[in-house]
Length: 261
Length: 314
Ligand SMILES: Nc1ncnc2c1ncn2[C@@H]1O[C@H](COP(=O)(O)OP(=O)(O)O)[C@@H](O)[C@H]1O
Ligand SMILES: [Mg+2]
Image 1 (cartoon, protein in one colour):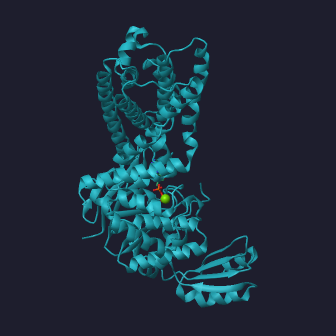
Image 2: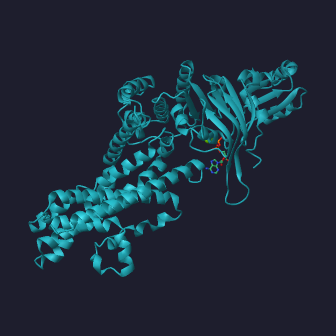
Image 3: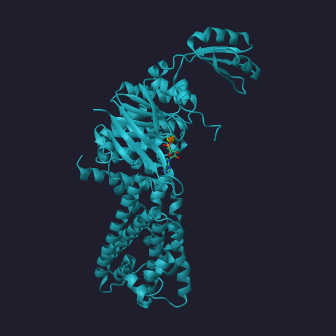
């Protein structure tokens, strides 16, 4: 088997294995189903103000992004932890090559399980207000959803490495949602963030992914640029994530990080 | 070419406080292809550390280690391709997945072409007596079945060297006997096997050669028969239904080297030489004991001679 075909085989079996592991214990997907229901409350609150379809769409997209990010931070980033816990990490590290590829693919698989949330949010809007998400450019919008999810996976990849590499990182895990929603301009408009924070937020892929999503929905100009920026930042983050994981594996083999949970 | 070649291997674990912990100290070892090599020693001797180094899970601190001619530092991938690792215990499989899925996953990770893998997996599942439950989640399996899945997983990539780290610990006797039968079969098929264990009977039954290891150092290496021969003087007499008074009387006899009786009344007497056996045996027969037996020196005796009992001196 050529190296490339071998890696493709590893990727395929990794997707399949991770999908099975998820579906055989679907409890870990429950927050994905439940979290977007908060938009029902939000929709209810704004209902008295005769909200525009645009505002409802923005709220729906916010719910989707929050659910996807939370899922990446709390479920996808635990793929390696689970491997340590079950002892499969040790075994996987005795495969000739390809364990990192497998991890990347598996974290991506878990993160992509958040994709149906976009349909859930649309369905809720339709049930409560009679309008689902209003999307002007469906192709661009589909791509924006994908970029958003892939970026979340890149963040989960980086986080999963840091959790093993940095002592005490785990205690910070609860701070991984709200501050990042703020940073991505989900809570306050991006332009209203304080100066230093705004520059930081410009380096965060999710800021541009959110802009890109909104632009694709509303048909505003600049959506493609936003998506290109989001993609570039996500790729950079994934690259750092892979480097961190390489380092983790090195330290595991040196016996500096425990193979067990 | 040797299957495994280790020279001056040392592995140190730094401790946050106090001196570093030396888990392996100046280990030299050569295992030929087709051997079943036993690594014997108490808990904490360094058996798992050595197994991990041979499967590239852990790097040596110093010294050289090569497997089928490939150095673990310079060519770790080639080493991994040649080695199958089986860890004792329940960990190391995807519990929610079936035995077949676990094997399929591993075959793909090891780049076994799909068609070859499918045939091999069917064969292995049948050989290991797992065919009827091949599609049930392994988390529902017994300890003995899990160990067979582990073995099947390690064999799916057809490795030249198999490393078994205490494979039968925690198994019930029937499961252990079944597992040993598989090792016999693999030995007949020409696989090189490193078997880490602290079960002397298991090593005696399976191994062509053994090494005793304690506190990270190899104390002796030879075939079980030759190691026993070196202790030819030690003859052991066993009996049941003994009392401490029995032991006290026997201990006073000339020709008795050691004499112990446990709470259940099991008596173990060793003689100072072969010539004393008849006299001591007669004395034991005079006592009100039952089930008298004798045996010449085995690996248990070699173990007792080489490795000090620290259980009660901690
Ligand atoms: N990752 C580690 N960090 C620190 N000490 C270790 C580590 N792994 C093993 N040791 C120590 O090395 C010694 C040998 O352990 P091990 O190889 O597991 O022994 P065995 O398998 O023979 O019971 C033990 O004293 C153990 O505590
Ligand atoms: Mg051990």
